Image (cartoon, rainbow, N blue to C red):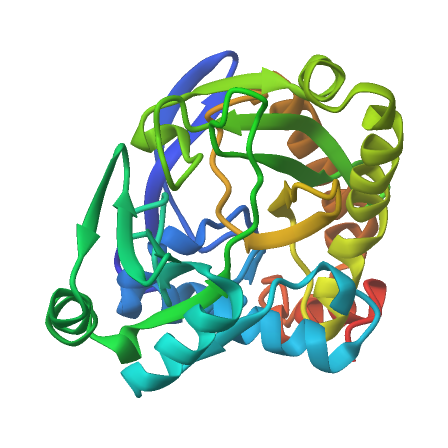
Length: 322
């Protein structure tokens, strides 16, 4: 990439073959927020293109904004952030089992469960659980993880009948009408794991209907309706709360022992581990929508180049981003 001369070296599909080309930045880029670490390149792309996705912020920031908005507050798990270990112990005393998550963690890494049973502390991670003395618990909070780098949540018992943790990934993409559509509902099961259900940490996957039927009896249809309602409405609320337009989204929910659905997290770089075909079809439809409805009416300067600032404004107006 030649930032100074605004040139990108890449490949273009011509007659079913990829050819290397040097071109100016395209008006629209299907962008993954995993690329944010390349700051200079990202700033260049932001100035010269419309990027499809952006990071929404830390897990706690997302929870906080949803609670402030109110409409989906019922989905939020009781959560605290603190720099004081005594507040962690108070939270643990209230709920007896809590989950410790890195504020900026990914792929289920660094997640622990801390329990208080009969006056004893129990720490679980991956497939192991061990008993801690109060002094060992203090050392863990202060030195092993550093209290201020984590958030603390009531433990939601989203477990199968065989006591394996799971969550439901609602994998969404924008479609050919610029609207959210579910590519796949995927149940991720932490086989043999005591804390997380992320498949990268070891586990298995299931389709939604057979999993709910096997684990929730006569309630399975009601739970499915609730999950589908979240899929239908929640992505639009996230865009409104964060005043942005997104293209791809992974919404993770869990189901507590009382069959209530809770929001775990939202991922704007959800990957293609499952449902690749469904995702690819939706992406192609959305690219066509953007090309016709937004870029097809693009304004150009005297040299014939797209006026990117005007394109961005048109894009925001199209999706009612204020």
